[in-house]
Length: 465
Image 1 (cartoon, helix red, strand yellow):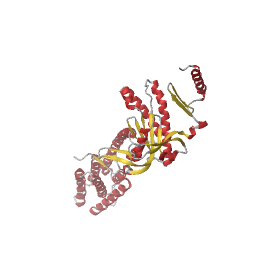
Image 2 (cartoon, helix red, strand yellow; image 1 turned 90 degrees about the vertical axis):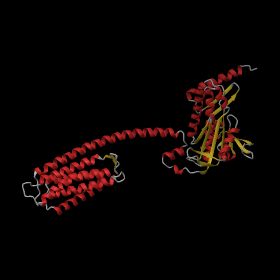
Image 3 (tube, one colour; image 1 turned 180 degrees about the vertical axis):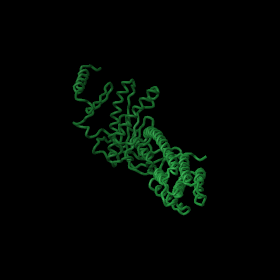
Image 4 (tube, helix red, strand yellow; image 1 turned 135 degrees about the vertical axis):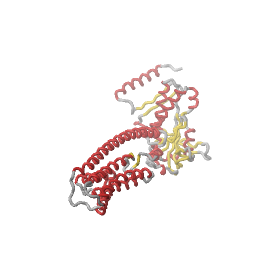
């Protein structure tokens, strides 16, 4: 059985039974008008038979049109409905002519044609239906010579008036149902859109931003494999595997998630793209998405690493206060070079990531770094040396590279050193201090000074053996 809902070019879902109802009303009204226009007391002649035959044709046409619409395929349903509407207008034109242009029926039927044309398809349908109406009137002239006097007999008008009145009432009810259906569909669509937005937002947490934007905007074709000059960052927590053996699963999960959340927040703050989390390790890429040039990418990456190191040291004290005695010690490695970026994997599982020798070197530098140390390659140092103070650590042997690699240890941004230094820290057995002047408020300044003076006085008076 053909679906009852037919999709029109207008985007509306129209119950296929409604056109049948409206066509039946029109044809019955036109047939009743023709029957009432016949002078039954006069002798029978050809014109009377033509009018009566047209009335029966209108009734038969409703069944024929229903059969044709039911047999039409889904692909041709729109064209069939359009053709039948044109035929409706032609038959109404013939009926107007055969009814001798009775005033009220003619006005009502012409109004019905205009209304039906405009509601179905606007100006184009209006032109088609009126063309059919005129053709029908012309055909009526050919088969029947209408009276020269316009007939205004109310007896003739009664059938058409009842039929047209019923037609408009039915169409009003139909329109009401369509509006109610559209409101329900709109509410359902709004709910689906909200759900899709929430799912898309959640999905964005698991995908690189460039990949997520390409997929959500339908531009996956732009994700071609290419070579790019990137700055790659790696970090991990020293002896994290031992920490997993000492902590309960819930505590470990909370600790790791809070650490990774902070690292991800800082990476986003500096414009980095998180490529992946590998346990406690973090891989961040600069230059693939929204690059501002190699120098800016490298500088933002190093500034991000300094911010991460600073935050990790603050979290170490927070973890200690929660009973985790093992210190949080983070190692970091950064390298700049040409890498291959794109989609890799199989037909069933794919990943958007960065690969290449320079990615491996960044990972090796992270593994070679001491706890709390940031190691960078010579390529990265050459881009940021005027802004970041670094210490030359000479050459180190890196697994997978045949020749030693020159590396540098990042100290801090030059603007944070000297007399304008805003962050101080130091550590020793039994002693830990980090002082962030940017975060100390004016009304806490005296309190901090008193604490430092008290600590200094206590340390001076104590005899350490």
